[in-house]
Image 1: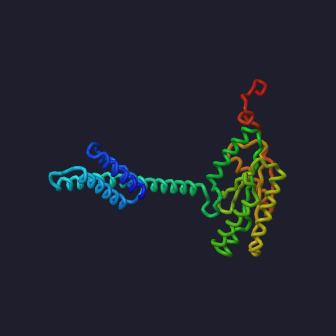
Image 2: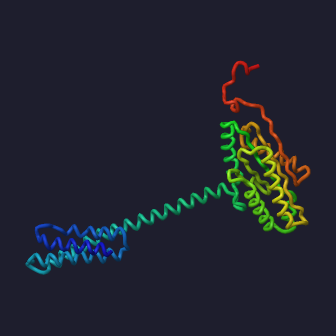
Image 3: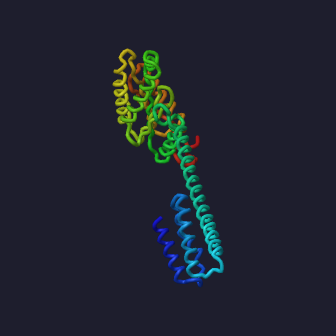
Length: 296
């Protein structure tokens, strides 16, 4: 505001020096525009009044009007123009700010909706949809790079007893603790997800079989520690690890392989089973067209 007042005073001085030879009324709009675009509307009214009074005072000093009413008319006209310009710009600025705020809110809502659509509301892990999409991308990358793929699948043992004995609220708390334990046992490059109910999965990025089994054992121990708080329920976890020497055709095939490994573990419960899933090479796997020697 002080800058606008200084600019107004400068133009008033120039107006006084040049006298009637220079039409300077429009110069006073500059500080009004500055205030309208940066400050609140009350300051626009104040600077417009100051500018019109300054311009009119110089006119009375330099011009000998036939009637004082002429100077007052010029004052009113200048004030009206200055207010019109200032308030119009202030309105545009306010609406622009409101539009920006609305755009930010819409962007936040869309981002939240996108996140909620891909995140399990209870555990904050990727949900089945997001996990499968990410798994599909990893399968494509593994196929391109010729790398194996490793998938961990786990299902809680006797989880129903938690719900029956302690209630679903406590059951939800257990699922949150299992999700957190799974996060802690994985590397930053690995991707966990909640597949549904008390079933979880994790993509182990470029893991070897011994390392994958070790991860499964750590998850097993972590869940056992949680189960120690519910001794009557005998909470445990069956962990299946599917290791694909050649990447599967699609995410569902990968999940099926890991699910089969988990059911092998489920036969005795509370253990880890690693399955080396063998697949016949396909044209996609080899990355080349079949040659005559390949045909029967």
